[in-house]
Amino acid sequence: MTLAPRLSRAWPFLLATFASVVVFYPSWARLGEIWLKWEQTMSHGLPTAIAYLALLIVHPPLDSSWPEKRFCSRLVGGILLILITFAWAALELVRIDTLAYLTLPVSLFAITWTLLGLGGALKLIPYLLLLSLSLPIWADLIPILVDVATVVVGSAVSAMGITALIEGSNITLAYGRLVIADGCSGIGFLAIAMVLGAFTAILNDYRWRGWAMIMSCSVVLALVINWVRIIALVLIADWTNMESSLVREHELFGWIVFAAFILPALALAPVRRRKTLQIGNDHVISYPAFGFIFIALVAGTGAVFMVQAREIEEPPLSITGADFREISAPALPLYLQVPDQLEQKFFMEEGTEVFVALAQIQRHSADEKIVPYLPPLVDRDMWFREATPAPGKEIWRRISTPRRVVVSHIYAVGAFRTDTYVKAKLLQLPAIYSGRTRFALISLQAACKTSTCEEALDRIAAFEAETDI
Image (cartoon, rainbow, N blue to C red):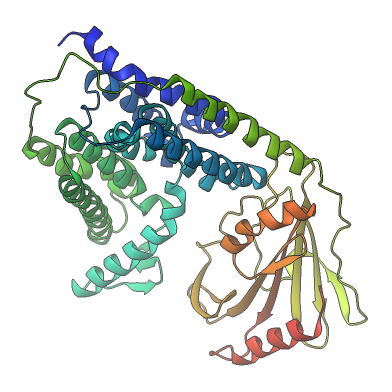
């Protein structure tokens, strides 16, 4: 089939994609900026988006056999689109970007349902799954992948009888130390393997069972490749006394290992060509349904504008009391890596020897987040988390020493308080509706005097019960 018939079948879906970009433009624009940065976790983003558009044209969705009443079906799709728009507007207000990005494929599904009916929207789902892999969700998976790799590699190193001291993600050999850090998470392998799996599934017109099988195989293969890569690096480092160039060029070595596994897998993957593709087009656009798209555009933008107009400036949080003494950052038992845009002050209570690090920021424009991005607060090259005795409380031990520190984090979002960063991100929505958009990170620290740190935990608990911050 020539290009013209393919375009005639693809253009309704391309039009739905364009409508989604118009209605949800702020999120699509930020997503485009992320794609163009070519960061390590998103280097596949732009090629994946281009592959989505290319597949719509060269391998367009097949006709739908879904029976439907056109008006009723598209009415339901329009209502779904309005609901998704309000949800997106709420996420856009508080700049919870990850969830806002996740609404984009869902919004595209709803727009396609509104314009083409449920059958057309269902036929677009495989392409939306591919497009979803271009969203910036991968960085949130890195800590999980690092923890899993730490357990697997640590167990393998112990089983092979290698002389090594394993402390969390740190593997100390006779001639040096290897750290299973973010670069060893294998997130790049996982993303590329899943994109290739989705690409293969679309070209073969797999149904849900085929999708489940090929995506499961892609995930397992990517994880195994990364574990093999790390274990091989440990063996090479042990055999060569840390002098091999492969230890220094571990990223290049990783991609060589990845290619050695993935290329044979692609060569063995099944190929099923479409026998025929009708010249006609069963996906007919309902032009009156554009009224729902116009309502979504006005409602989403209007809700964002009205709520942002209610924000107020809050006074900064402060800690006062006779027993508090302001100190400098080096006096803290454990230095925290807090972003520079947060204003910081440090205190110590003389009686309990509890240290307080207060970092806060006030949102001044709609482009800013209430809760800013917080990188890992503790230097993993110097410390590792030994235990989490309670929600929000962690015991950190300095590597190769018995020194331990209990750290308790309190996240203040407007008038709300929580003990986890994830909950703080979710609390942005009620905070912005109340008009209060100041964020503060309150970190309590107590040096342990025993190996169990029970007395340090008791001191922090007593401080929290008696002090109003």
